[in-house]
Length: 87
Image (cartoon, rainbow, N blue to C red; front, side, top):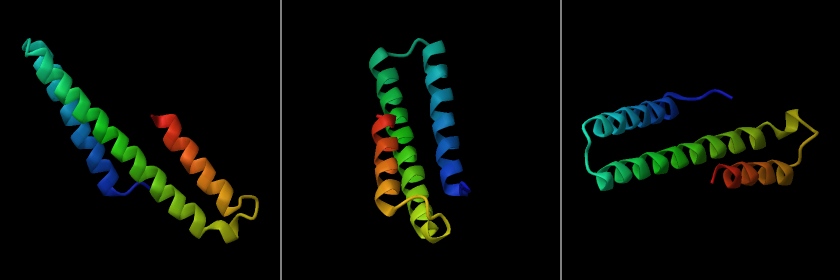
């Protein structure tokens, strides 16, 4: 699977958030503010996982004719399992 620039940019923003959180910790910022930023980062990661799984699902279903070993149902089940596992 190819990862487009949109997904890579999401991860770069998350990386920036994490660096900002580390900086906040070094500056002894308020615990509430640090937790708020950590929660935002976790949400961003969860959304990125969703984008990757959904993109992969679409790609797999589009290519199902090339891979006779997996049914659409199996592909969807695998995608759902990935999402559940990521939580």
